[in-house]
Image 1 (tube, rainbow, N blue to C red):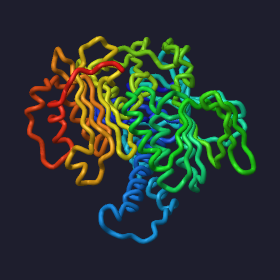
Image 2: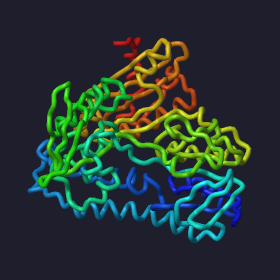
Image 3: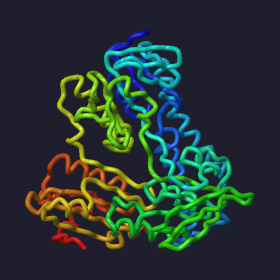
Image 4: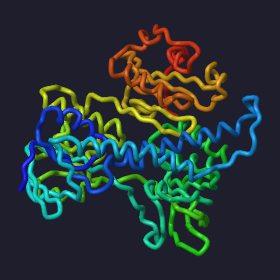
Length: 458
């Protein structure tokens, strides 16, 4: 049995942050990885998908030459080149992290699936390893919905779709969340016919209705068929492709496609670790229970990233690692201190931080709301990017921002400004006095506050 000072299970984004601080200490470190180094973000999440988003936007913009005042010849999609660029980007990230670990003298990269056989004893194949500190960073996997016949169909999750070498002809997507919306637009812009099936009344049910409706509108404008209130009943594989039977507003309907993407959420990989042997507790949804410092029920064992259920994003995983490191070195950072911020990378993108409008109203506060359509922002008009709107929510008593939704050009970047404002506790009257660069989209954000008024439930 080999003993280490630190042992990390999984190589998602929290792992790189941990190693950045632990390697220089000279402590002995083991990293266990069963699959590809880098986790979901590098291999089939942020890195490859945003590379595809960029290609899809360039293609879309090239077709708008008449709007901008120039002519182009026939525009053809070369999916092989698109995939080659995507693979080059993600391979560089994967290789870089692998080489870093393998070249660090105090790090052992152990290949295989690790599982607990005791509170701080992990088995990998026939090997047993122990550590003073253990960090669980094993992430999540796609949730497979209960649909009759699904086991007999060659369906894809996001990873399989990215590995598919040919462009889908008629793509069916089950799931109208962030993954479903992004892939729908990307593959529609590449030339595929796309039908998106969503069980709820709107896309992205956690978002406000005005946000979801605006996103649905510009996706449909690009030719994507979106069916809300649709329940997938049964599916089968035929010689011609996929036949999906759905119930749409109580009526039966059949959808035909060549390929099927399942994007109905994700579940934690905690069930692969034999946590019972370690005494580590999970909640009813399978996420590992942690305190404000990512500590599990076992002393010296931490759970970071998606597997602890306190965020499903790369940046929250990285922040978990920063919290753990800060705790180990005597700091006071905690999960409860952070403001949840995230983005949907459609075109235009959505940036979100803090509360949604429905959450703010449900909190019992007196909420003030300020909105402005992108069509009234000069920089957006100059760029020809006028879809969407900005919405700010303010606590009437404290004058602090409760949340912001920026749906429009630059929304994925602008939202970071509001995350910083909320973290710093800057009152809106002081934010309104800030001088920002002209001409930009973000410069108009303080001015939106001039039209603020009380928000009321619909």
